[in-house]
Amino acid sequence: MTEWLWEIDALIEALGGRAHGAMPAGITGLSIDTRSLRPGEAFFAIKGDRVDGHSYLTAAGAAGASVLVVSERKLPALGKMQSPFIVVDDVLAALGRLAMAARARSKAQIVAVTGSVGKTTTKEALRHALEASGPVHASAASFNNHWGVPLSLARLPAEARFGVFEIGMNHPDEIRPLVKLVRPHVAMVTLIAPAHLGHFASLDEIAAAKGEIFEGVVEGGTALVNADDPFAPALAGMAKAAGVSRIKTFGEHPEADYRLVEFQPLAEGAHMRAAVEGTMLDVGLSSPGRHIAQNLTAVLGCAALFGASLPATAAALSGWRVGKGRGEKHRIAWPGGGEVELLDESYNANPTSMRAAIAVLGATPTGEGGRRIAILGDMLELGDQTRELHAGLAEPLEGARADKVFMLGEAMKALDDALDGRIACEWHESAGELEASLLGQIRSGDVVMVKASNSMGLSKIVDRIIAAPSGPAARPAGAAPARGR
Image: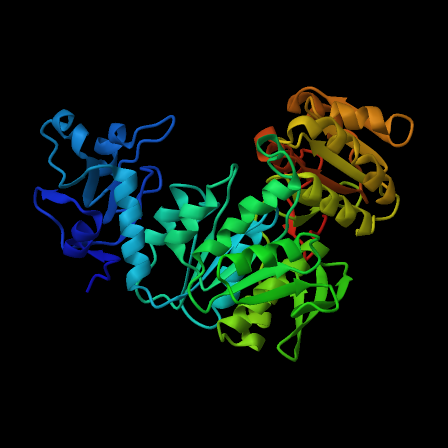
């Protein structure tokens, strides 16, 4: 028997639509992208800033969509298409109504995560950790905006025990309507940091925008904030003003409710110990980042709030790996019998996460004769503080004992100027130029860290290092060493 995500009558009612054509009994999933659509799913023809989903209805039908959700105003242009339609006033608004219906029918414990850094990594850690205690549904990828959140929520299965949702923003008043859809039992803020400063006048404004997440917390719910964040008192005040009576904290602060009491970098990852509800929990980490351990303390705290098994949660986290570009570590066999260690932080960057990645570089031992090499690209959306915040990375790089710094992008010129005479460095205008210079300089024993805002494209540099002609393919950290012949 097919397990429907939504039976068709319930779907039509929740959407506030009307049926055209022979309807299926139900749908197995929801999609807004024909490239990832699976047979049996409903395709929602959302009109975005650049693409209108109505242009892809034929492709959706060919991919196996069981029903197409379309706008009333587009109906006359659809001609004689044979696929069944559900016609609605506005497709995105209808998706929001379906998200509300999904939340109303759910008995899951729900957590919403926001913050300037660490949202997606923490969301994925929550997904993995809570699975040890029951079925989990979580946002896909970084689906954290005005369409990603309702899409993720509308996909929430009725039988899920836990729901994990990431909520992001670039401007004020973006989190507020989304969290009121999600209505979390726990609202978590990882950290307030200088990201998106191009849209805000100060960190105080960023904190106020992030604090909107507390406005959707259900009665009796919890605000979970970082005790090591200078904005923790302000966030707690925002939570109380929003009617949240229970405030919990996580971090290394001695008064944190869920406390990181020990962190030890190891040759392969790290070890952490956390005090949660009177229990000491040990977790082995695949990544050596202390910032990741701090957020995993929040994950353990959330598990405690949900009544999940703490030993099972800690054990699950020990088997969890960070996602691609978010601190993933590779060991690459290199000519001469040695290895190069590659720290892939290429997914995104802001001043706080950049400093954390540089600290990891500094804490990572080099091999014999090796050096610490940083490959850094522009951090975007920093507004008037762009030059100052890029130049400010010089001191952390010195503290990390970086031997060579490769830089890409206009904003990184400020760091190039600041490093002049202090650390060997190269600035490049294009990724191709940087790659051509870099690959010939890496040698056995080096530790190489790559970080930039995602649109800078440094993930391609990571791929080229891994697949460099001078070295075989990489193996994950902790795997058996590659053997020469």
